[in-house]
Image 1: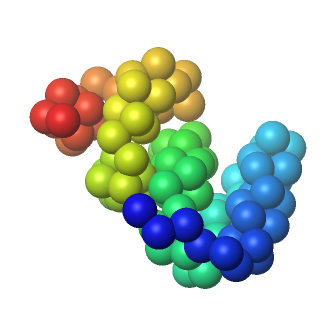
Image 2: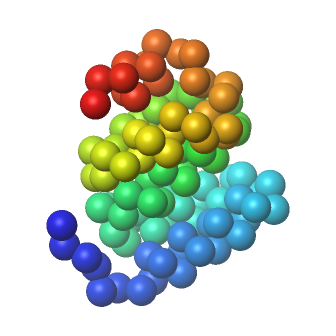
Length: 102
């Protein structure tokens, strides 16, 4: 895996994490998307984007983002299994396939 040397994706992600903690999901989503646009292989931003979408009850977008995070780093399967922010999509067939098929 290539590690990006551009720190801007980290700054955008960090700001997204702050917004997320404050419950400002739209702002967090925008920052996570910025981080991803700067480094499309930044798995943590994809995972956090999935969590934010899940909390907004945007299941399809949450699954899509989670799938990308898992493609980049299989460790996100374990994290997603216990992540409470996925509780509202946990029983969906798509989520079960994604977590169970890896």
